[in-house]
Image (cartoon, rainbow, N blue to C red; front, side, top):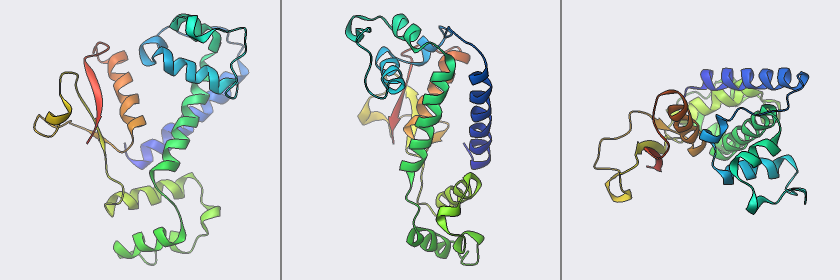
Length: 195
């Protein structure tokens, strides 16, 4: 996913979250049962309660549907996903003055505006721009792909390579969830593997 699309999606997800916060929503669409395992739903529930799930819930005894009901709203899931995305983006690369200057020097862009702009003043556009520069410099490479479920670890390089590679596992997992939800694939037909 290119930087412009990523920034645009992040913006729209943030705006959607604000709109959902104004609505009184008391149910979650069961389609999320296709996107998340019970363990992932429990992670969301735990995140909602800052790591302390209330004693009124009994996670080992709860079904996936019960955990989804306990999450209460789609807004909660959206907030969790945006938080995951933000955390994943931060882990992908280190933004410090040395990394910025070495990347710009490698690309012959020593006069780029990011060379002079203080890193604490960077906004989402600046971070996205720098991420694109990291990709051009070969410092940020796609490391994950979606494969047929029967592809073994030792065969992943010899079989047909994935049509699209993803920089983060999170991106690949989200695309896998979309393929299951919208493209007619069944749960278990595909899997994400690190390249």
